[in-house]
Length: 241
Image (cartoon, rainbow, N blue to C red; front, top):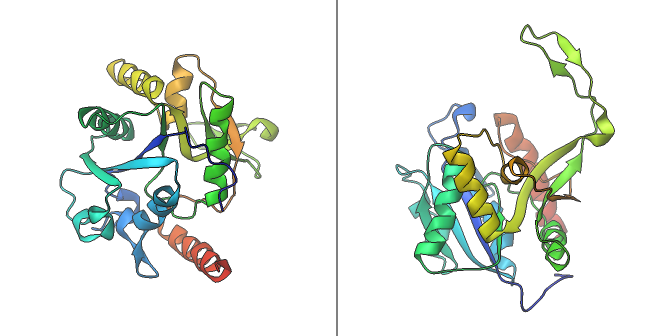
C-alpha cells in the first residue's frame, strides 16, 4: 500500500533496456531472461506501472531488439518505446527527448534499471517522498557492508577506503526532468565518463540525496545473479496476499 501519494505529483519514468548482456555471454539480453514465466524487464517495470504518480514509462531498447514486441509490455497503454544509443547516458537522453517529441512533460523523471527486478513498492514510495523537500532529487542506495580495496594496475592493493562513507548506488533514481536532461546533454557533448544519472549531476556541482533502500534490490549482471533474483521473487510471491 502506498504511504505517500500526492495528487499533484506527476512523474515520468525512463527504463534504459538497450543493453545486449555481454557479461552473460548469451544471445538473449539479460532483461529478457525469464523467471516464473515473466521476463526480468516485466518484473522491473511492474512497480512503476502500478504506482499512481507515475504517468508514463519510456522503455529504451536496442535498435535491433526483436524480443520486446513479444512481451505484454509492448501493448500496455502507459508504456512508450524509444531507441537507445551506444551507452546508458545516450539511451536515457533518447528517452527524455522522445517524451519531449510526444509533448509529454512533468517536473520529475525517474530512471530505473531494466535488470533490477526486485525493487520494492516501499522503496519507490520513499524515493518519491523527497519531492516534498528536494529540488535536486536523489537515489536509492545501500551502505557498503564489506571492506573495499582500491587496486593498482598490477592487481596489488593500493589502499582501503573508509567504509562508513561508501554506498552502493541503486535505482530508481529521481531528478527534476529539465535538470537531468540539461546535465546529460552537456556531459555527452563534453565526453564525460558517467556511470549513472546521479554522477551526471555530480559533474556539475549538484548533490543528490541518498535514500537507504533494501539490499535485495539487486542488479542482474552475472549468471549467478539469476538464482538470487529468483529466490527473492519467489519469497515476494509467497508473502503477497
